[in-house]
Length: 305
Image (cartoon, rainbow, N blue to C red; front, side):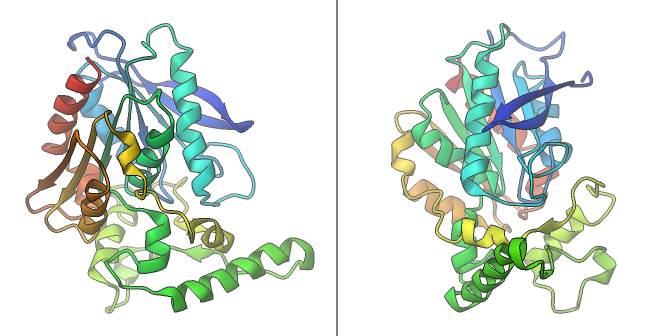
C-alpha cells in the first residue's frame, strides 16, 4: 500500500490533520466510494485506523483517517480534551471534506468508528443523511462508560460525581490558576501496571503502552473537564434513526465492551448486524483485522455500491 497523502480540513474552524489513503493500483474499482475511519479515545490516526486502511484501501476504497480536535496533530485548545459534540462534528466535517473531492462520489460515503468513535460514528450517522453506511469495531459509548463503566456496571453515579467534581475544579482553574492533575488513562508502561488492574484495562495497556502501538503523539491523558461533556451523552439511544441505511457492529467474544455493541444493535432497526469474532478481546480488534477487515470490505462493498 502506498503512503497516504497529508491533508487537512476544518471542523468548527479547528484545523484537523488527516491521512488520505487512495485505492491501490491493482485494487477493484469502487466507483468513487470512500470511508471515514475514526480513532478511539486518547488515540490517533496512526494507530488502529491505519490498521484498517491496510485492508480497505487495497480493496478499492478511498479512506480518510484523521486526528480528532484537541488531539494528535490536529489543532484545538485545550489539549487532550474529549468532547463528544466536537467529535461528532469532526465526523460530519470529514464527510464535507470528502464531498469536495473529485475522486469521491458524495452518495458513496461510509464511516467506521473504533472504540469511543464506535459511539460517535452511529451518533453522527443518525442525523447526517450524507453517511450511507455505518460500521463500528469494539464500540463504546463514552457517556454510558462514564455512568456505568468500561466493563458492564463496573462504575456508578457516585464515582461519576467525583469525576464531575474534578471537572468543575478543572474549569475553575481557568480563573483561579489552581492546578488540577490531568487524568492518565493507563499505566505509562505495561510492566508498571498494578496487580489489581482490571483485565480489560490490562488488555488496553498491552496495546497502547507497548511497542505494539505506543506513539509519542498518543498522550495517554485526558482533561478532567472532559467528564462533564461525556456524562450525559448517549450514543446509541436513537440508533433507530440510522435505518434504512445499514449498521454493522463488530465485537469479540472476549471483549469486555461486547455489551455496548449488543445494546447498539438492540436499539437499531433493520438492516443491522452484530458480528462477533471468536476469541478476540477489545484491544485485539484494534490490530487483529484478518477477520474484521474482510467483513468490512463485504459490508461497505454492498452498502456503497
